[in-house]
Length: 383
Image (tube, rainbow, N blue to C red; front, side, top):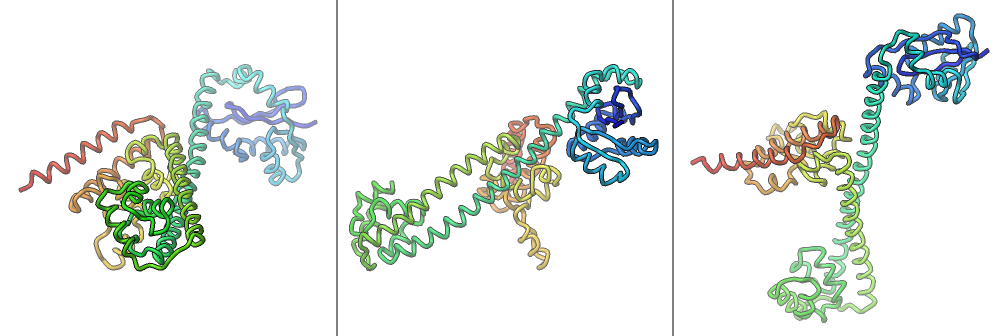
């Protein structure tokens, strides 16, 4: 006759075919501990109570057991060679515990089991949400990696297109540093003979003065002649680059949506782009939340830090957070203080996002702006 084993907030309990309780092992009456044990079982890891109960039953001569979890059955087959384990869903124990939990609790002297169950389920739900968030910040990490790959490949193609078109109109490379405008001029105008002042202004949106310079340079250019066949291949390359620009925009919007779900406080403090990159460098939101502000301040500047340590130079004052406008645009003597203030708020935001999920981003952002204003004001007051 098989013994049926199942677990609940009460502990691990064994029943026979008639539904009689054979033996049990209670869980501690701590909802956090019980939630941890149930979460472990859900992930396929047996508790000490499972092992103790089965060892006792095997010692009494029982050799056949059923459980409602295949991973647990697999583990016990390895640990208890003399016994036979099989999966049965539902088994007698599970059915009884689900239908008569209150009665079983009274038999075991467990009061207020409904209230205790709610506490355990609340903790399990929070744990599940955190686990899902941890899985979703893997999406952020992969998306940031894709964004970097797009940027790297786009830059390679742009350099190639500039060098290619410079054979025909070399002066344009110097006159138009903006890549997108450069590509638009090639795509919409093409041959340098068609670079009139009006055509340049219409295709690029450049000022009248800039358009005049480009048109004049085209008229006096010493570049080689291109025909339509040459231009067609070049325009196709430009088209591919524009598609990469569009893909980059879509990925950026996707990252912004992920940040709004996973790290809304971090997004409010530093924005989606910087926040996502901090998560990616740290290896996840949980990892970022465990870092002190001093480490967050220089995330992304590890090479510079190691170089400074090796050469006994000054360590970097900021890493990725240098991209934050108030840090990047500040006078050099203020960047360290502003970066330190920003890193402190980032640390708080990451911890709130990782632990409680409460939205305090607006308050953190307001406090950060007030602190930056104070830093700037103190500097202005100095003689």
